[in-house]
Length: 249
Image 1 (cartoon, rainbow, N blue to C red):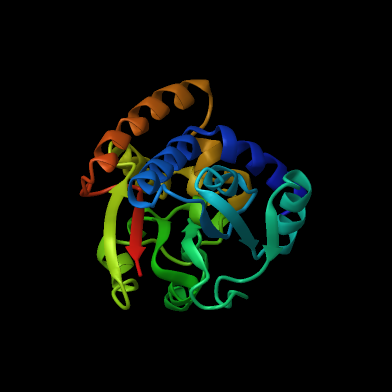
Image 2 (cartoon, helix red, strand yellow; image 1 turned 120 degrees about the vertical axis):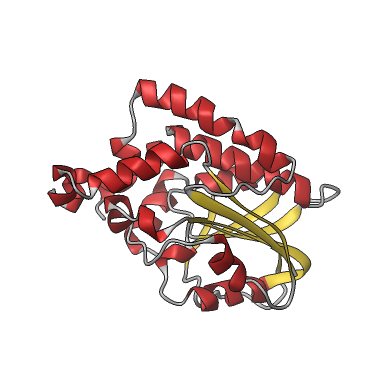
């Protein structure tokens, strides 16, 4: 990825309807499950251009980790206030039992050995601490968005839960982006047989560029945002474009 990509992604991560609602869902859920009587020690792994770390500051002190060299260089300059270091989720350079909250938001789908990634997050999580992950759902939804973003896999809820079974308890897991799952599934399946599927991957772009624009922004934001009520109530949605899971050590 070049610097222009990260400049564009910096704004997408802070302005696009999907990111806006996803982040509100995550932060709203964390507010329910985390202790609020003290600032927490937080590790956020795979931060891209850093907006989730900015949001997590509401809960305490945040240490951020980014693996990709170009992305790390860009984010260090774009958001110099972040406590940011370069490192891999497969070999976190921290002692055991170091953090109250460990997050990897749309990260583990990028690595071959996702079990090792999860084990590393668990290792650095304190006893009674929380690990929070989000991932893309359902392999049949694979399209150029996954190729552009270098995904290795998409998940079902049983698959995601299976790599969190040991040394603690899953406190919540659910699909989200439920209402839009059906039109998005139709769009992605249709794109596999239309000319879009034959275009150059970089030219076709990710879903963030294809499904954008002021009309999409307003309509999809309102539809997606309605799910916050259900997630905040602990409702497990039966399908969705993404998955959210929290685990307690």
